[in-house]
Image (cartoon, rainbow, N blue to C red):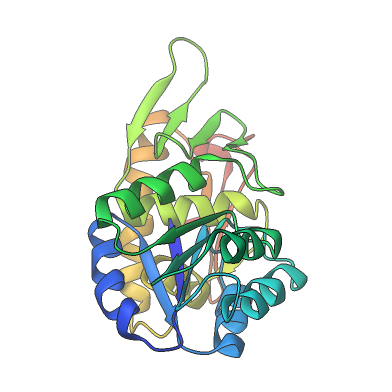
Length: 238
């Protein structure tokens, strides 16, 4: 799961960023509205946290701009103080939830889990290609061929990579885009690190089932097939 924190002051993000990483999120932080819009447009964001001194005041232009740019991820506003009317203004501008300090991080994390359990407008809760299903709520993969379905445990990075590939079936996804999505924009994740995560995914998803659904496109990146062909029929993959 990828979280985007928008905090013009930066002080809340300093504490929230590592706490969310401990919860398993890949976290991006922005201190300006333009930077937030760029990060949201460059990567697939699962949830946005907008930090504000008062809800419905400084956060409204940022929330409105994100929605106008087509961002469909849930938005949680974290405010230091605020009235009921200000909370209403934030919700009416496009926020999905508002919390006013002081609030324990455990509650913030629970609210984020609740928001991300709701299927986004343009994305189903489960993603399916052939006999492979990605359960976004349980954060695991399932092979649903003949016989009993097989549940496959995934690490946070394996899950993020598989989700990205399954969101774009048949499309070549570059190593740079994978690195941004899995490790965060600007992270120096070398291509061999990306290749290692792909190798781990193949060991779990493909080889035990005689498949080769994750295809290497040499010099370009990777793409996810529709799961229609066994490994023996995929001569272009490695």
